[in-house]
Length: 235
Ligand SMILES: C[S@@+](CC[C@H](N)C(=O)[O-])C[C@H]1O[C@@H](n2cnc3c(N)ncnc32)[C@H](O)[C@@H]1O
Image 1 (cartoon, rainbow, N blue to C red):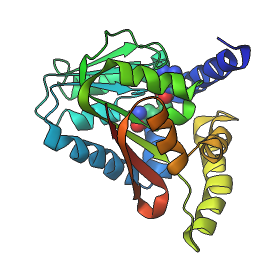
Image 2 (image 1 turned 180 degrees about the vertical axis):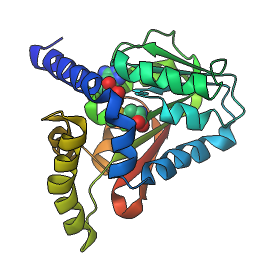
Image 3 (image 1 turned 135 degrees about the horizontal axis):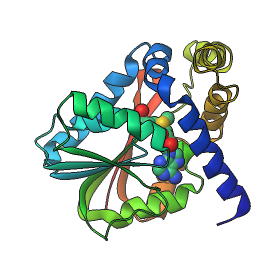
């Protein structure tokens, strides 16, 4: 692995381990609860496919996995590189008595420890932006997905029109980093967030990457004025 790729992975891992205790609180606070509506959209896009085994990559504290457990699934596996995020997720899962359905494991999106063509669906919420090597992560997701099945990827995006664009830029670049820093006590995490969103190849650029790694019929749905986008594609 290239030294700067390894450095990004270690930086992301230690940042999420560091903010883990405050992650859920900040998520819901900073998005005014809209993040829950976005995760529900991921569940809805998968509902017609009736997946039995789902992989939730970059699962963090497991909120998407917990939402997906409302589907009639047999098993949901969540993987993440930040063990402290997973530990909080495991406690939430135990509280909801979902241990038989959801299993959270340490795992890297760029080296997924499952055989080819294993899962009926793959999801990622607010994770792909953090991958050290985006293409490698997407290729791995493609590999472990069964042919004909769907990947659903939720990620932040930037609203393009007035006045939401201006409101968003002010909020994302000024208010969010200040509140994030105060609550999480992590100096850089909530400065990294707007920076990583700014750098991420969104819209047609991301659809292009999905196609490049082999996915068919890539599509997108802009959510809440384009603050987030739900991408989907078929293997
Ligand atoms: C913003 S959080 C999202 C967590 C969760 N999916 C959610 O919706 O709340 C991003 C997560 O991606 C994880 N992550 C980043 N790079 C990863 C990688 N290469 N493999 C697995 N997880 C990764 C981080 O550790 C972090 O928990």
